[in-house]
Amino acid sequence: MARQEKKKDVVIVGLGWTGSIAGIELAQEGLDIVALERGHDQSTVPNFEYPQQIDELKYGVRLKMMQKPSQQTVTVRRDGGERALPYRSLGSFLPGNGVGGAGTHWNGLNWRPQEVELKLRSHVRDNWGEQIIPEGMNLRDYPVSYDELEPFFTQFEKVAGISGYAGNLNGEIREGGNPFEGWRSEDFPMPPLPTTYDSAKFQEAAKAMGYHPFPASAGIASASYVNPYGMQMGPCNFCGFCERYGCYQYSKSSPQTAILGALKRMPNFEYRTNSEVLRVELAEDGKTATGVTYWDEAAQEEVFQPADIVILSSYQLNNVHLMLLSGLGEAYNPLTGTGTLGKNYAYQMNGGVSMFFKDAEFNPFVGHGANGMVIDDFSISQNDFGAEGFIGGSYWRAGTFNGQPIRNMPLPKGTPSWGAGWKEGIGEWYGHAMSIGSHGSHMSYANNHLDLDPTYTDRHGRPLMRMTFNWQDNDLKMNQFMKSKMEPLAASMNPDIMQAGFKDIGAQYDVRPYQTTHNTGGHIMAENAQEGAVNRYSQTFKAHNVFAMGAGNFVQNTQYNPTGLVGGLAYHTVHAIRTQYLSNPRPLV
Image (spheres, one colour):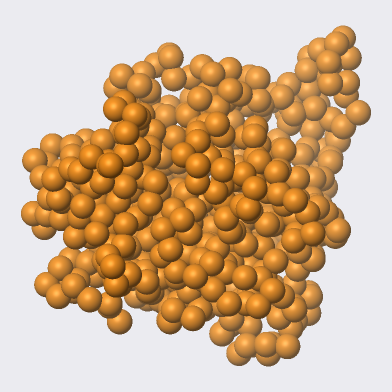
């Protein structure tokens, strides 16, 4: 029989970005809160201290900040005709582990979606007609608009400490910013960071072709900053150790830097680490949750934590898995189209061009995760879907972001991968390479979904979650379109060697190489329970006192990195809980 803890007002599952936001905002209401984190505790001091944190072999290669597949993983297949096999070695995506979650090891690229991305089906219908939507594409509108979310995007950017320059300030298009972004009620909290040589070369070439380059918006401090919770950030020193690392000098936006130091001081908040939530417990009528049952790693026993409100704020894949195991909705069936849990799983579509210049020195050891100049001229709002034959878009970025010597060694194709020829290639080309990357949207499809695996179980005896996913022609066409536009720009820079890397039509998903940790969908937002798992406030249709936050809410993936939308939706959700739900617990409309 499970040990039972004292009842809390709120139990939070996962203490990353969304869990930290929910914790501090609801603690300000005087609620008694406990957060349960499956992983270990970690703070800037002592866990991210220099020089231990910039151990590239430990963190960059051996992935010590990431979720261990032996602790939790998924099975993967491309379609219903294949048998799914466990994801045993991290490759394609890297879920974080421990307090702070993926917010500790991300690169810091922070974006808002374009206005049309939140109403994409309507945008397609109104401009080209729904007949251009490919068969099997589950194209949807979000049940919230950009205008509704704008104050919450602004709130998140202030808390996270985002650097940048507004291109659309209250409808005024400003030179030097992104002219295609949604309107902003305020400028960024901090100005943009300086640019590196490669990004300056890209900026010059893009301008010459009539494009509109601007500095990437960054969850990296360009100056000293104090956020609304009184948390301090220090300016970045361009050390190059962002992706896969915690920031040792309080420069990168993370739950540790932005929220947790203030939250831990609040007497009505506590958190327990090494506490893996196994299921959400539902009342007999199934309409509300009574709390959660978790595994106490130290005590080696199950524990029931009763609570009036349950907030699911773990990583997207873990959220969906927990909801499926707990019966928080009907599992999606791709053959009948019924059910909502696991529906509309989506990913990201990337590509790029690498260039080698014999006479250019790029100093690749200098950079930060969100460094670079960007163009949005081929973004979703700018593409003619009817003429081009695809739905989607991409932003392009050039800038040094990975200054790590083991992982940052680009060489021309044909260079030997080891031995004397490899050493000769490094001697000739190290520091002489730059790249332009395309970061593109990914639509949702009937085939791509998440459900419970019928064969494999985890260490607790629960079915693993099964991922059915493959690339679809629409997104591959978009990728090839970006290649056709990017290669002429790259060629205009007159490199000695140029090589492109874009997935072609017919490409099959390969789980082995790293691609992006932008897994989305699975507990999507919708106007009603027949179309989604949560409503516009991230409240589950199944149980009104359970809220599921994070990228699982995405109805399809945007062209941008997801953190900005995740943060905006999180503040939108806790605002609704504070102003509507607490005074009258019920399904919100």
